[in-house]
Image (tube, rainbow, N blue to C red; front, side):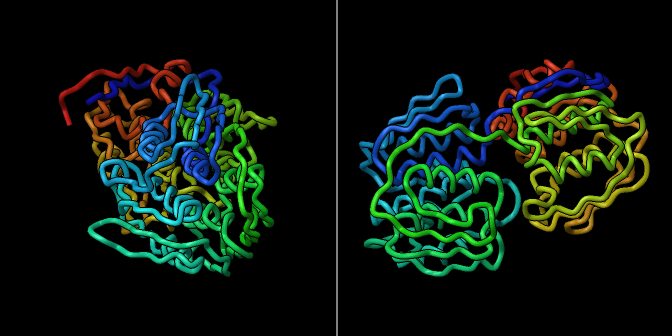
Length: 420
């Protein structure tokens, strides 16, 4: 078990390249189940979650080679249609294999998903949508068993815009007979990337990037190559790292258009931004202003940046209110930040953050991916030494974060630890 040891007080400065998007990779990888052949993916992030998805696909018979941000997937020998508990429990995105398997092979057995340390995140929208496409769903001893002959298009309206459900139904419907219309579809960049990938494979999809997707099913698809889009959450996290350390950080190889909500809030804090075609340069103010945030579905402020924003607000002047409207119980980082001296009052899904003069280093424990990022950010500015335990969480979604932070001037190192 590794941990990070951080000596705070270093002002970050420099440029850092943003890796490929985790959530795009986790959608495109299972989409390869829809057509037999060879796929070459570039700009693939080297992450625990990506390796978990690769292990799951390999269990189904996909041959995968992964080296230097390039992944080759050969789907010519798929011979199993079960996603077992021991793999699915590690990552909720494993549910993405359900739609492609039942659409392509007429059968899928997928363990109920796990992989997050906070909150119930129901999959009812996935199952209801597949049922409308003609899939017979059974739940048996913790497994979802899906059966169908060829799927049939239908009109599907999500009560709540869901990234996962949109992706799963989109992948299933491209091989369905007839037309499928998805209303209130998610429009996150990762869903747009998935839709455009399917389009390149030969799918017929209109309305990409809007809340209404129309899919005309085709008989077969063809393998294609693809480059992963930049990870907008990693970009936002490094920009906040620059802001919280009163530094000057430039993130490159990103897509600023996907960062609009985050950039607007950073401007309100007092940061000066220079926005290029694929870069953002941030110069932090001497005094951070308190700015309220309410998470919303895209293009609103992302829930995946809520924990990092709270870390920033702990040292802002005044009081800020951070509300998470997506996941009400995603605040396990709050008591750990308070161990560092933060002044935060939590009321259900609302955190009231009163800025303090300084944070003091202590030993803290990661509980999930974004909470880990929050604690690392706080550790970068806390006086003395901060130890962040359970950093395997951060490895799920940030590629070599300690190396990238050191390149910007941070004093952070990874060490082996028997602490848990």
